[in-house]
Image (cartoon, rainbow, N blue to C red; front, side, top):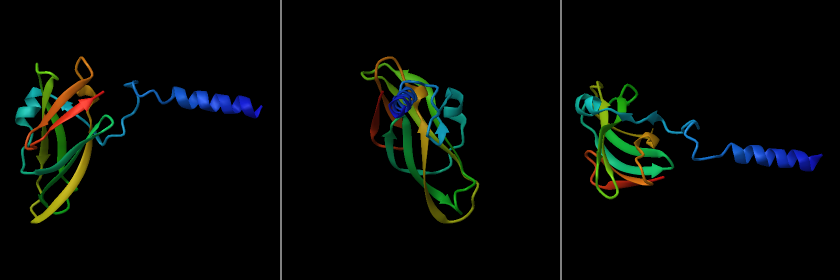
Amino acid sequence: MKNVILVLCIAFTISGCNSDDDTNTSICDQQTIVSAEQYENAPKDQLFINSVAIIGDCLSINFSSSGCDGNSWEVNLIDSEIVALSLPPQRNLRLSLKNDEACEAFITKERTFDIRNLRVSGDQVVLSVDDFEDLILYEY
């Protein structure tokens, strides 16, 4: 009986861990927005991008801006909807910040964004984030 339960537990665990299943709930903080209109018109309050890294299907962005505590900030990662036909293909992204805080502290935060909706045909895409010098290779 113990062997049957063990086999069922292993089978259930394996079937629930399919990383190719896009219906899995993302562990990222937010979804990436794909919108040419928002890419151009979303808030552009001053921020400094300290680092960018890919962790699984999440793009982690560490950034700083002036403020009181950053709790009221509205932050979004927005894709331009344009895919450059390079090898590998490239997408342009912008971190949008709406910051109404009028304090002089310098706050650093980190957010993660689900980037699965940025995939193109093939198995990789280069991500270019405005105001960040390095290109990021997203492989899937």
